[in-house]
Amino acid sequence: MRIIVTGGAGFVGSNLVARLQEDRPDAEILVIDDGRSGTFANLSKEGPDGFSFRGEMIGRSLNDIDLYEVVEGFDPEVVYHLASITDTTVHDESKMIADNVEPFGVLVNMAVTSNFKLVWASSAATYGTRANGATQAKRPFKIEDAGRPANVYGFSKWIMENMHRRAMQEYPGAHLVGLRYFNVFGPNESHKKHMASMVYQLAQQILNGTAPRIFADGTQARDQIYVHDVVDATITAANDGVTSGIYNCGSGVTTSFNDVIDALNEAFETKWEPDYFDNPYSFYQDYTCADLSATRAGIGWTPRYQPKQAMVEYARQLHATFAT
Ligand SMILES: NC(=O)c1ccc[n+]([C@@H]2O[C@H](COP(=O)([O-])OP(=O)(O)OC[C@H]3O[C@@H](n4cnc5c(N)ncnc54)[C@H](O)[C@@H]3O)[C@@H](O)[C@H]2O)c1
Image 1: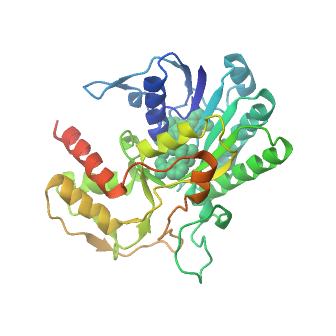
Image 2: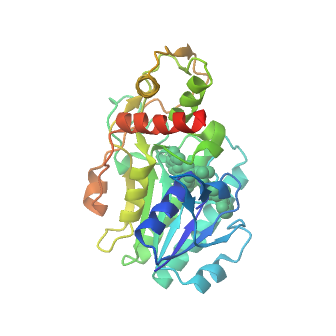
């Protein structure tokens, strides 16, 4: 089996590559990643939980290579497309849209005509801050609630979804699955720095001996999902029999920032109190939660991990690494 993973040196991508290599030792894997926000170190790690990538890599931007030629030459059965500008604070609209949308257009056009399966990462950012309408009670987001993203990152993903929907109308037999990842946490995210998960950032604050700082009053509720669940969903989405479409990929439950600190205190056996400060952002997703009914029906996947327990497990790993 031949598989391409774009963004394979990044956080989610490197976890995906590791699982693919473990599950399918005979697969030929080609990673395309220019290292703008990922690192080779995610694919080459020492220690008992280490990892040695056995595939090939093109270390250039998708925008700077002849993507048609590369994909055609490799002749993949599946392309997992995760490469993207992932810093949601980037405000260069032209760059965000050009870098995220243009290579996706090439891949979609090729997938529908060359018959490889395309599974790609969309985002809960497509829901914006008022997914269900400002006046409605907070409830899990259904697929049709999206479409008013509050930043250009979410907008670029929304444009990609529009292209996906258009392609599906023209080629209903194509295998195209877009997954709206919610807030992902887990190993291999340290390179993301200020864009790493709240779990990672708050853990670092505590491990460095300072109180965890969160927006008052810590009750903001986000759908936070362990990266191993995201990898499961992403691989499952390429299975035969899956219904093409755009699906939520979250835990289906909310975990507040206060809950995250509880999980960290449990993992580290500490009793830190949050250091609350006022949220300076008017456009802020203070509630996200994935409705997973369409995901279950369309790709037959449900999460395995309970987020708070997964946070404890992950924080213990961070503690062990921090101490060495
Ligand atoms: N982590 C999350 O919470 C989350 C949430 C929603 C959606 N997503 C999506 O999941 C995917 C993976 O995100 P991540 O968290 O692993 O981020 P990441 O920044 O760690 O990974 C993205 C990878 O893509 C590479 N890349 C970016 N643009 C490229 C280009 N033009 N050419 C080649 N390589 C390029 C980067 O170097 C990086 O390794 C992204 O598409 C992101 O938008 C992530």
